[in-house]
Every structure is written in structure tokens, then in C-alpha cells.
Image (cartoon, rainbow, N blue to C red; front, top):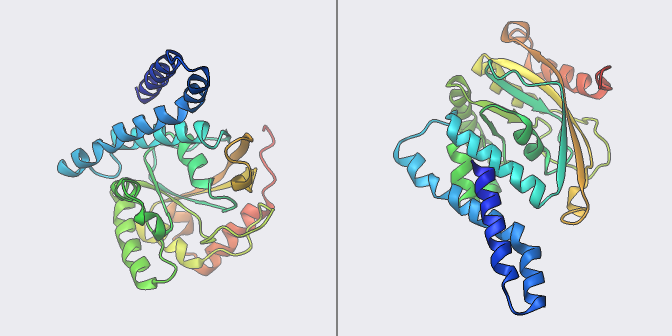
Length: 264
């Protein structure tokens, strides 16, 4: 539905632009029509925010997450020109916290596009200052991380634990930040990030993201290629007795030694 709406806006804007008597104006308008169409679709989605709040829609609501996934997909293809390849598959029948290496600001976008299930993530607290975006990610039950306020981060984690228990999946980057590096290996994982999966008593899914890292230097003209690989899923019983410090080391080593699936 959201794709059809986007295509409708795109075709309408392009058609109107081509009716212009000025060739230069028409050319510029047609060139910008995908971006204009995206903005119109974005406003359509933003219109849902007060409705979702009015009816107290839960973070794992299928329609809410459907709109989120479709908007992200359009953004990835229109603005970032990012093509993501998924190797393996997420199990939509289980509740899970997904842990990943963190190499680029587009990491969450490529995972959220490919995961065909409800999912929130762990954005920087600064994103909450952006109108509409902050309200939207709050509706999803996302877990904002404030590096300068550990107490607030703890409060947000307590909420995130309950959100996961209630059925929402969560994407976590336990490195805590994107570093200026050109490698996919993990240098350090924060042990505290694994309290979420242990306190929520749910599955832990480990993934590895590879591909173009320095996305900022390529946007908006050069195509971007990313790959999301599912390493494995661990049920709660297999990890519940492992201290978070040891669990973080195990997951870091698993990501760093993972070279890919044989059938990829």
C-alpha cells in the first residue's frame, strides 16, 4: 500500500512537472520528484502519529511496524541508494534481541528494512530532538542511549526490557558508537548491553553487517551495498547463566571469527 502511494505521488508530480512551459524548470522538477514524493509519503505516515497515540497502539503492532519498514525501505532506495542483501533469515515466530557489529550510521536502516517482523532499535538520544522522528521511534518502543547520562539510560533500559517482554523485538549495537574505522571486526562490546536480553528472558540473535562502511561519503550519488548475515540464535536457557562480561566476549569473538555461510 505504501509503495503504491509513493508511486502515485511520484507519477503525479512527474506528470505535473512535465506540463511546465519552461524546459529547465520541468527538468529540475522531474529530477526532484522522487524526493518530493518521499516527503509527501512521510507526511502521510506522520499523520498516523496522533492516531496511534490516541488508541494507545502497542510497539509490536503489525501495522505500525509495517509503515515503519516501508518508510525505511523507500528512504534507503531513494536517498541512500542502498541495496541490502540478507543472508539467512530472522525467525518471526520468536521474540528476540538482535546484537550486531556497528560500522556505519546506516546499519539500523538496512536491518530494519530486511527484518520482516516488528522491531525497535537503540538510537542515540540526540535523535529524540528531531520532530516527528522522535515521536515515531518512541511509538516503536525504541531504547534511546544517552552516553552522558547513565541514570537515564538505565531508566530507558528498564522500559526496553518490558517492551521486549511484551512482544517487541529489539536491535542493539553493543559497541555503543560508530568509530572511524574501515573494518567490520568488533573492538569492544559493552557488557551492560546484554542485560537487556537476559532480563527480558528471551532469544539472542547474533548478526554481522558488512559492505560499504563510509556511507556519508557516498550519499546521495554513489550506490551503497550492504550485507546482513545471520550468525545464529541462542535461546534463553543456553545463555541465562553466563555473566554479561563473559557473554559480551563470546559474542564479540563469534562475530570477529565469522567468515560467512558456506552456501552464500
